[in-house]
Length: 160
Image (cartoon, rainbow, N blue to C red; front, side, top):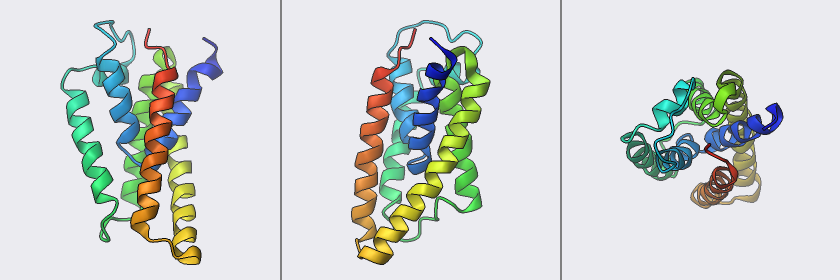
């Protein structure tokens, strides 16, 4: 697998993470857990996500995030703390999916998460402010997009 091909899933799952911080991890950890007992050689992020307890916990957190996003008091994803959290989670999933290039994958995943957090925030804000589309509706559309994207990326990824 070429270097670029190895980093594309990191960028994609990082971008998913920028919109919904736990969805990329939920899809990837589920796939990693179900991929058998192959060792995650020299990739601490992958080893973490292959732990048996990782996938169920991450899935619960992802479900909670989907609900929380629709609530009025949820902070903006571009506020410092949520943005840094998305960058860290994007780095984690990017590192895990990048196999032996986990450092580069972590950087790419973090960049993807931050870029998509800003892009999604501004798109959602413009659609809400200019087109008066309710935030709940926009949030559900975001959910559908990131769920489909994460599923597509993870299903194209080879775990071996």
